[in-house]
Length: 211
Image (tube, rainbow, N blue to C red; front, side):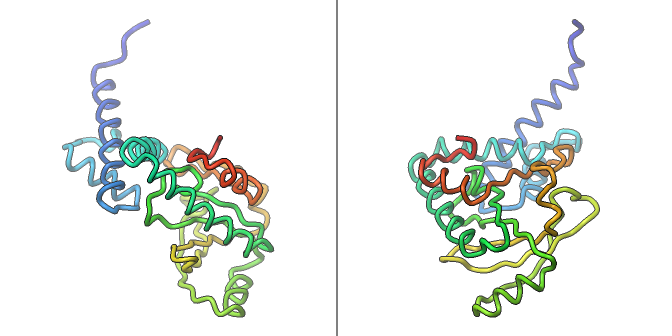
């Protein structure tokens, strides 16, 4: 079998170095945006080609490993605390069929990470009225759709829940039947877990979503 070109090996090595450096920046520098972290890491390492940029999943793997290595039991306690808060919020929003996503689910979150939850409603007004009726303040923003990140945006309501930022992404009910993972080609991988799955994670105390 022919050996791959040397430049491909160099590109893969740089990709791995950028992923590790981006994870360190996120863990130590308070950066919570994958795109910003990977661009900054690439500049610091002098990467010349955008083909060397890792996807979000690669960085998240490095970030989880970094926190488990250097934070140990403290990291595990932080993940458990965030998941307990997430479970409390999911029970509160149970009528909207909540799913936990993001770093709190995967176990790569830090102490200041937001909790990301997908909710399903006919429109965002339904959730806004739900919060207003309960006198819960919120801000509104947008984020890429987990199935169509290039073409579609969804409404996200941000609230403070038990001292932690909670980001509630609102999807049409039909999206519940969609794939659990968005296209990995653009680095946007979305795993999600319902109430029962998060209860099991909290009960076991594991920092891994697939335990």
